[in-house]
Length: 529
Image 1: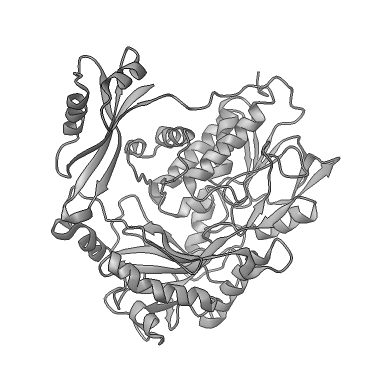
Image 2: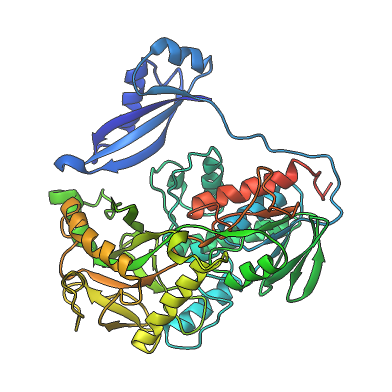
């Protein structure tokens, strides 16, 4: 329990100690009476001046709540410790719990179970990160594509090849648990206090490796190159999972597949697991020079060593649809992210330093089940596949279609790049970046670019680049679960994370994975006692 003093605004080049001093001044306390630490810090670059905005945590030895109520000062609030207690059940498990998938949700589910003595058995379709790096590098250099070990599948999930962004809007107390766990396993310590924390792909991979080692050291087991092929349900309850190696008996399994396990979704549906279509978004990647984004947001302070590479977040609604920027990667690259042969899928990635020449983000448009209803749960999957394969046919290779923004707005194909050079590792084919997308998506993007240019100077610059398509913004299906977290009609099966339709990014997926583990722990006693 503590006091939080928020909205402390200081010039960006003032030292952090000034924020602590301001917190003392606002509360009338001194360093001898309390311990102070920065709780969160963000950059505010609006209105031509740049501030760091702090919230500071003060820990008092007395009744903090009473002190806060007596003080009655704006921006000072009492923050109780609202993390849920770690549950502990009494029933005995006949079999160790199973976790399927080692992306953020599965990783945190397995980590939590291992930490408290439940010895989980983890199945991961792809390889470990060493094998995965080799497979991705081979493909990006023009070699063979591995449909089971790529940017989507393997240790760490899709999040391992991203920016390692840890921003979320869920406001769950377990977010602090996620940040603390990542920091304990090698992530930068400052992620626990940044308003927009990020790790970077280069560091995040080592963090994932460290967490996997912890799982194994604490009684868990991880089996790579082992895809889920189905489940066994008897009398409405889970009794086994099927993999390429056969059946594994279990009463409880966390299914954290990720949003690209299309064949596994179909297999689960055939086994009687209830799935439904859900909204998602599709679009392209947009690239600018990072220096131009810095200049647009920081003005004359662009390039200042105390300022991080600038970020943006843009959105527009029209006609019941949304067009928005998503997964913005400062100083990053556009990457090849397909999970099936003869398709093109783009995504974004940044290293921790975010020191690349270009900035990129998804420029995405919302699609609704009504746009792709085919009478099955898989209409969204079919739309994704149609777009991805059409883009491949458009270029005749794994090169991605690429187009300058000025040409896209004018409705003409691009012949060559201008000031912004594409970062896509396999190479691009100039022409029409969005030609494989539905007309309504192209129209929404074309109308939104000038609007965004009015919000962020230069966003619609003629030489900015579009590379497409971006289709894997979130899962197109939901594995429906009840209030007890069990899949409808299959007690004991716990769908979790982004692929199951219950998260949108590393942070929310990790939190959902912890909750899935807690669901098992509240019912059963540890296996290792």
